[in-house]
Length: 74
Image (tube, rainbow, N blue to C red; front, side):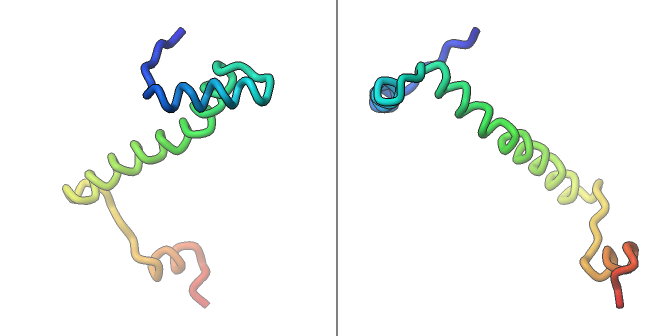
């Protein structure tokens, strides 16, 4: 179980949506989390890689090198 605080206006919108659609507020909160969790994880991981690149700890390749490695440099 998770408890969250949201702005009153968001709570009202959520209430209205739930009433109009017959779904629960919990259903919509769960759907919102599930829809965005992958994106949030991707952003967090990308930021970590970017920091490693900036510190010179992560190798980078330009597009020409990648194409050569994959045999796509016709």
